[in-house]
Length: 58
Image 1 (cartoon, rainbow, N blue to C red):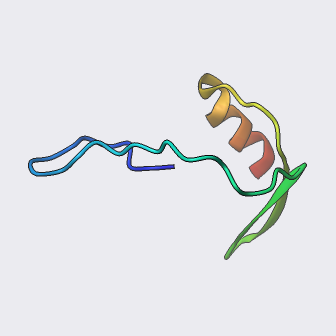
Image 2 (cartoon, helix red, strand yellow):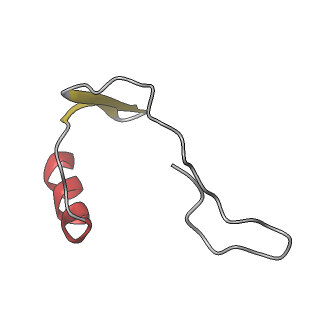
């Protein structure tokens, strides 16, 4: 993942042409000061992100 914000003066567009060398897993663990959550890895459309986050936060 790279910077997705506006590109200012003297900055170059971010490009990644590499191959993913990591590991795909069925879930990720998100830990914060108010708890930890196990999140199943699935496709979530951009239009549904807010709704999905709210559903797992409650």
